[in-house]
Length: 385
Image (cartoon, rainbow, N blue to C red; front, side, top):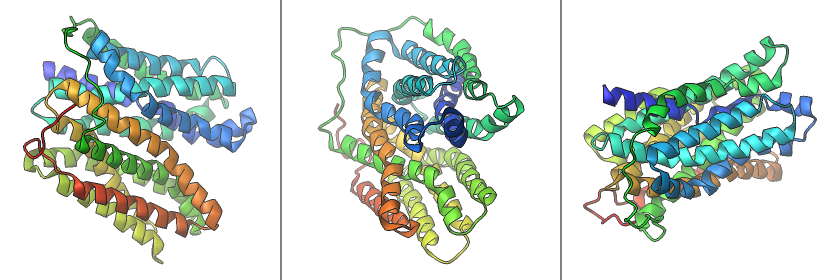
């Protein structure tokens, strides 16, 4: 029963890591028209949390050492929930920006510490990371899919549509309250673990996470505009983004378990990256866009849980897993935040999406190069923090 409780805690915590971002992304045009803000200002509502997820990730391990893993995660969920709920108090861009920042900080704490949570409570089953990944995807899909219907059915009530996702946080907090009240067994005589800034393998993980997240956020932002530029209808372009998101769920469920049973994470990393490579090549060919989106979704669905899994399987302790995750997510999300901007800049300079797709091909090729250079397995290289 304890394992089920811990799985539920992991699922509910991860469920809250994306709605504060994707609810805004789905409402971007409404926010611009109702609040009278520019596209640049509106884009900050999604870019700011992603950058915070990178910049503040290292703080998570320090807080965990000071207050304990479970209490820090409880505080993280609380911060996300409060930030989401505050969006219901006022319909101003200032409130949206402040809550985007606060929510991003909460996500930056929870992200790496959930890897520590898996290492602590499921030390022999790193494939549990699939629960983490799938729950995040479900949370993102729920918020992106239902925020507009909630907005339309409540007389275009923007604050309600954006703040209602705090309910997910309240449900999670009820369960996490029991974990937060557990007696903490922190050993304050041990020196705090530092980020493995000089560890070659940790640097490789960070670069991989950066290229992976750059591709993910670029595809999320630009799949629909690319489809529109190819002459597809707005409805079909929106459906392609939904397909890209939904196809990741079964892939994220299967890949970590297969890697846990068979080993060879490097092989599956490269296979998933090649799937993205095939999808991008398909986009450059005169053929229907759907097969390209399927290959891109398969690749993205496998790469993200593997990126979360690597620090867990390559470290010895929950604390070490947390520092490795913090470092990879710090650099990775900062790179990821600039991914859509870079692809958009290439489009502005070239005037067409073919150049942007080629730029993404370069990113995936660099990611495969990093993966090929990895020596996975602690027997091959001593892990050091």
